[in-house]
Image (cartoon, rainbow, N blue to C red; front, side, top):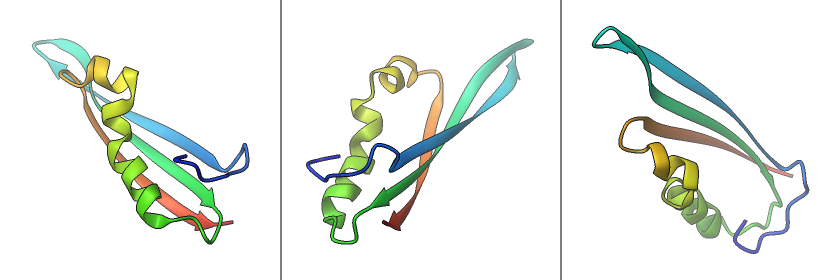
Length: 80
């Protein structure tokens, strides 16, 4: 993550999708991603925040579905 050394298991996420009936068709309309980051105590917070703020715009999957699925996220950051 932006030059910050982290352990292999330091970044994890779960995702929750919302299906809605639109014109009698069940569609995936929302995805919320819950990140958990275990970072070194001295990790530069500005770099971490910038990476999180821009990750949706740099994710190929998010860019493929952004016009039809609302994508939101939250992150819990824990000092390792």
